[in-house]
Length: 488
Ligand SMILES: Cc1ncc(COP(=O)(O)O)c(C=O)c1O
Image 1: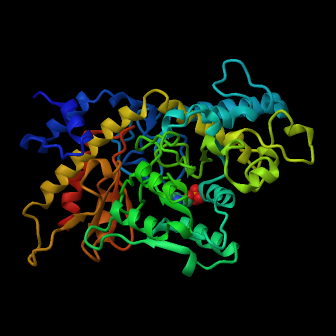
Image 2 (image 1 turned 30 degrees about the horizontal axis):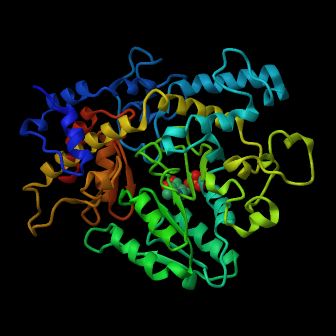
Image 3 (image 1 turned 180 degrees about the horizontal axis):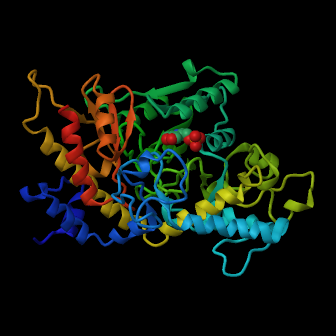
């Protein structure tokens, strides 16, 4: 059976649906797709929880899978479709953490300024910058000074808003979407209130289309037009966490800039998932976490992008003329490295995004991120995106097969895909709206069938076959378990 893998990529890249042949319903076809996938071996870099390890109740010193288990232990991997929430563990992270522990144990405080030969890690002082260097392709930055790793996502969102949301009497509004991730909602509302304003007058929420649940670009553009003169900041997610909708970042950014609006993106669900060109798209700032598609571990250190145009005197922010740099909530790690340890009273920021650092970052955390990024550096985002397009299209096609002729006696379908059908308007996630009241039952059945995916109350499951370590065979297995789950 010859599989036209590249022709699927081509079709999907032009925004069309991929037509799989009838035999694509078989496990053999799924395995053929895996055999045609040039990125298939990347999975070997990860520890995928097994069906048995997911039930583990006590530490036993063994890792799941064929790495280091007793011969009697079941090694069958779970279908891990939750990389949009917490990525699977890269095997190399253990070595990166061990390296850091040995460095700390051996060099003590001197590890801030020196590293050991043969170590994949730099001195702790340079580690965040090294991770920035390794992330250029991930976010499409022009230089590592546009990226910094620090704090966590919501904290970075606050720090960026402290610098980029400077409301005036005339321009005080923030345009956001109707249902941001709650942390973003709280951050936006509290920033507005921090300035003595009220969300009732300063927050514009873009409502979705009631039919499809996602937000048409035209609606965003018309709100930008309508509120352009009174809006200070447009803040949207690159990918909406609930529906999986990927926004047209370059188009929306351009339209907002034409109205003089500053533009920030929360890329929690986009980074490591879709291709990004933040510099070329002229995005003012962006923030992201590293525990989802980047696989750096639960609660791992987060990323920030600050466009080069805000690094120097060309920055139109009035505070620049006053201070010599854009105003920010500063801390000693944002000071230029050359003078950071001189303990000077006057703040002299490091270049670009690096000057937005506040505290000494956790070197353990950065070691974990560095390991995770080393796996991304084995490939390129465009290749991962190629695979993601086909993987997600295959999932969609099999789901549509389940829907065909599967309505209940009232003619209602067993579930609805609420993620856009256009492959260019979504990443690796498909969100499935279940029949009211069926979420707990379906979730339980998926869990018992060895599927790990995310449930969002009241009725949605989010299914994310991420291209880094998920297989077409996993998609096929998911469908088998899901078919039974919705019929229970
Ligand atoms: C879109 C979005 N924003 C914010 C957050 C909160 O992130 P953190 O707890 O790292 O601040 C998340 C977490 O999943 C998220 O998905």
